[in-house]
Length: 388
Image (tube, rainbow, N blue to C red; front, side, top):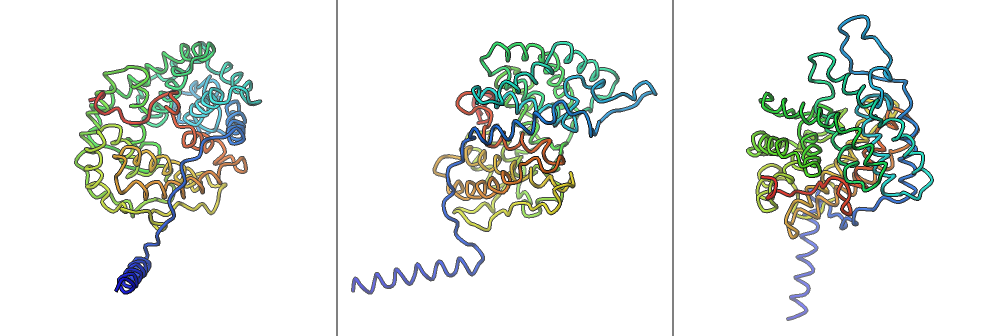
């Protein structure tokens, strides 16, 4: 009799697995814990930033000409952030150098990183950057993506207990205040969120800015961001994740929104919201859920965005998992998908093509050394009760 029950159990288990496989839902092995950034990776990522922060050309400037005198070289327009192909990449390239010099102070790249930061983050250079922002009535420059990364650089410097970092933070502060003020002025006028997979997306920028408010203590901007996040996103349902990615995304509209809302909502409330927003998240790890992006031409700057998408999806999936209650049944699937995206994304970070080399190191660093790790920098995890 016992043998019969065991046989039926084995048969039932085999039938269940066969049915699952027939439905195209291959069971994934449990995801390994997220890896820590090691010194070799840090040196490689730092080398990418060091190669570009002083590299003025090629350069894609976002510059409005009001007259012939406005046609100037990037370093004349942006005396601190003229490298790395564009302004926002230069900003997060400096964030990368500060982050890695803090985390790996004894590595050979750290003195060079400090020297680069010391050359660029001077009071005179930042005054020039501020003058550029205020030169006309154009409030849209690098909004919101570049402004949010500027705040992230400020958060990193504020959280670094180091004499040089304090000097750089003091120099950056006027530009930091201007970036925050621009976002503060923009939010009441922005009637709808921006749901795209590139720079103008609101969800990702809101997350970076919220993390900065945790460090800076800017309660006015924090309250405005929390209110707008609820206005824009709290009622959302059935985000079409299956339609992603678009061919040149580097941010997931659906996952970025969820990664933002775990900063806004307490875990139980976030779990219920996620049920409505992304109901198709599996309740167990699956190898076929959420396929990573594939880049066929890494020299094409737009197509290479998908390498960055894999990196940003990885940290967003990890963030969403961290925002749920510990025993939530979706956590294994989220972490398994994060591991797949992380593996492919990190494999693409190299100096082979400047189209990706000028920015992918920052995304890889943000993934492997997230702000707030070990009490450093801005805290990405939600402090929902304190923020509302």
